[in-house]
Length: 83
Image (tube, rainbow, N blue to C red):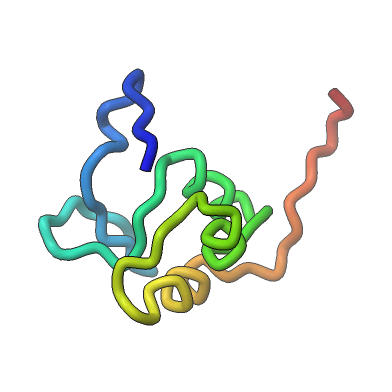
């Protein structure tokens, strides 16, 4: 995955739970960069869609499904400003 060198704090592994986020050395379920994570966090795309576009990689079986379930939302992204 491509790393954004100007923000080294985003490198590494993180465990994302419903209660929050923490750094970890445990094996990862999915691999992606901060831009992919931002897309999912804002609700525009799911992890499965990013994988289909080669923007994320499933590292363990079921990892994409678990990640999609964790970040699931019914709210569509929108912007009130025209730019």
